[in-house]
Structures are given as structure tokens and as C-alpha cells.
Image 1: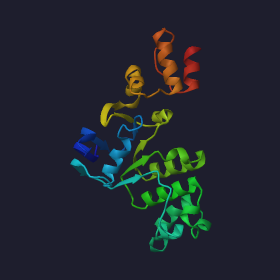
Image 2: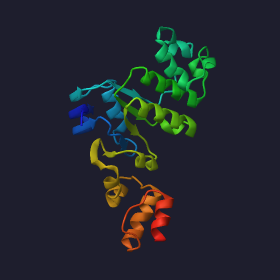
Image 3: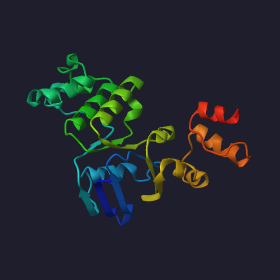
Image 4: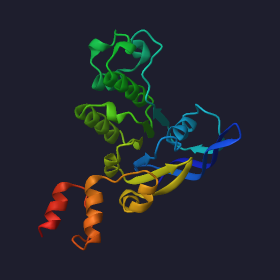
Length: 241
């Protein structure tokens, strides 16, 4: 698999205190990652380092175009059109914008948009850079199911590798790989289902489990199941076999 980003010996410090200390992380093409951790675990700081918004020590070998979508609500331009530099865009790029935002919003002040519309502006800005690797910091939760599906569909269509930071653990089930940060370090990482089965460690780190995964694990301990299931239907079908 092609590596899109290599991170080595990443350190962020302030006032002689280490806020982030990561020996090594690799992000691969077509391996979508769910990144989680409790507050102050270092998730957003890692993304700020990747976006070059904060000073750090270490090496980042970027082998593809990278974009980061942060949870931002304030804009400095007067219109959505200006924010997206619409008049400078080629026709194909304008189509990207109008896939997510109606033309009637173009002359509105972006600060007057709804929260969801603001997040769609942020996604448009990221998509217009044609990224190979997209990091999203706690933004999907603001989207309706309809717009979330639209964003995911676009990401899949454009073969964009996705790394999502989220507190909603159920979302992890849609990702190939999972990383958990704790106190500025990687506490555990691996294939998502393998990580989710580390129940005791995750709970000690303050990370819950998706409901049906947790229930499957408990029933497995009592010998009622022999596998882990992620949906209600799978679990019910297994119990009634």
C-alpha cells in the first residue's frame, strides 16, 4: 500500500511540558482511520501539526496532498462566493461547490449561514484542493444524515483517504483502522475490530464501546456467542441460531 503521510518523532512542548509525543504514525492510501481519545488527549493538536498551524519537532514526510477540516464557525470574507473564490474556479470545481451548497447562498455572508451550511463551506474548501488524504476534526456530527451521505459519497468517488476525529464511538465501525490517543501518546492502534475488543484497556482510557459490540463481548463471556457483532440484526440472528 502507498503511504500518504509518514510521521516520525513528533513532539510538541510548551513551558517545558510535553503535550504530544509520538514515535511513529503512518497513514496509507485507502485505509480510512478513526482517531479518538478523551479531552486533551492530543487529537486536535496532532491535526494542527499536520496542518502546519502549530510548531513541532519531528519529521513529516508528505507523499500526497493533505487537507484538514477543523471545526470553525467564523469567516473573514463578506460572501460565500468570496470565501470559496468562486469566480476564479474552473467549471468542474464550481460543480463541486454546487454539489453541497445551493447557488442562492453564494451572495450571503458566510457568518450568517446555519451551522451545517458553515461546515459544508469548510468541506468545499478542502475538496477544492483535491486532497489524497483528508483529516476531519469533529465536524461530521453537525451534518444531517442526507449531507453526511453526500460528503461520504464524494470522498469515496474521488478515492480520498479519510481520517476522522470523533467522540462518537459508533462511527468507528465504518473505518478500517483505529487509533486511540491518551495524554499525548498513542495508547493503542490496529484494525478497528481488534482494537474494540480491547475492552478493559479502552474503558480505562475513558473510551466506551459501540453498544452492540459491548453487548456481544459480554454475551461471549457467558458462552452465549462465539463472535462479535456490530448491528442489532447480526446479534439477534446469532442468538436465534
